[in-house]
Length: 574
Ligand SMILES: Cc1cc2nc3c(=O)[nH]c(=O)nc-3n(C[C@H](O)[C@H](O)[C@H](O)COP(=O)(O)OP(=O)(O)OC[C@H]3O[C@@H](n4cnc5c(N)ncnc54)[C@H](O)[C@@H]3O)c2cc1C
Image (cartoon, rainbow, N blue to C red; front, top):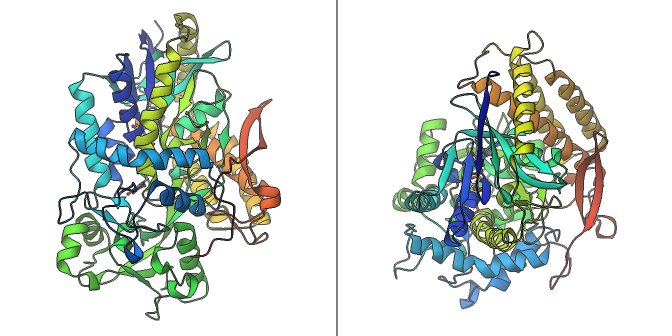
């Protein structure tokens, strides 16, 4: 038998690729329906990036009053989300999420999730950027940790199959329908086949194509690349969120919860500069606005040497910092040697979130029959051109459940795939992997990866412009050629991390190109996409979603209308 060939083909009703909040929430719903769902994940589910989420999850529970004693509602949540998205979000999808958000939070509560509490015992809520009410439910600054552990306990309790440390390498299609995937078992180096009547992609974001990122190293956008190669489309890839406050030097996230609790941004003159840019919301304007303002302060010489400003928490007092922001304090002390109780934190913007992703409709259905997508890897589109803080966690659990419900409906009539295509796909992937491992010479992996991340940060950062972006795209095309010659020393199949990193890099380079092409084609400024050569939002020509796909081995760009609704596009004032 050839090295690495594994004859095992696993059969399940539904395959869920990804063990983060989206994947686990979907797995539980599928199990509720009596179906055999299996989670396939390249890391142990508890190491999924969701575990790192800090600040909280938005839902209009209305546990605290807004200005003048007003009460929150799903409609206010929807309005803030659409306005925050710079009117690019699909309003039917936003409405669905905001209506379902309170149920999703209470569901987690009933599953045993520990939330922070108000004095009256209700779930605590804090103000977040771009939100008209204190709407963000939280568990100190470890919300993702608590939520993921809660869901995982239920997955274990119900004995749902989890294939952990299986790296999905391709989607298997038959007659234009997605019927499964191949995956490298990292421990043994064997390639397995997985077949199902429906496949849910829940593989998270692709932040690691940039060099200054808050994302875990595993956020390499594999799912988006797999979908693209199998004939799916990616939507709005140019909209990349830069979080205003990442720790200077390491770019570890300093949650918006810190400003939600009352933290303030100061330039090197000690000025609370956000008062100038956003007189009403000040430090709690949406992320695209605050990140741009910080960059501008730094560019105009009002930042500190090296490129950062200060986030001051000292006035919150010891008790509040220790109780509500314990993780942030620890991160600051460990990684910057600064205790926020005594000193302000040095912060700068860093890549944080991918608004774009696999093009899917309100039910998570993609253009490839049999393939569904939800969570950060998808673009349904809830966040449009800019995501509000706290809206991603709620998206994962709301659409994890809702897309699973659509799958449950659809698999009743879906064909049962047979093994023929899977066997051929396993052989194909195995040969490819052997070819990669046996290569000698060429560039070093790390140089190629650094070239990509530096190009993306320098040429497709917060401020963008045609000539620089065209240079960036040319660079990315050259780097894509280089990767065909990259080799590494480890020639083993077992636990070959170099091989996994290489496969991820191939995926990342594809996504880098899709961001570049989308950004070049969008000749306007909207949300996180700021063109210095086209500084205005242009609703007449660009109130539409960008799509990228492959035709004849080439990436193409096209467009699709935005679903509008109650909220008419207006100028955003904060
Ligand atoms: C530091 C940080 C803090 C954040 N805080 C908040 C917050 O407070 N509130 C909020 O709303 N949002 C927050 N976000 C965003 C939010 O956490 C994420 O968008 C969300 O958790 C993504 O969940 P997910 O289920 O889509 O994917 P993930 O949790 O990223 O899970 C992806 C899964 O896919 C698997 N996978 C990926 N590729 C493969 C492959 N090739 N083969 C097999 N498996 C694969 C991984 O193993 C993993 O299990 C934060 C983001 C960051 C970076």
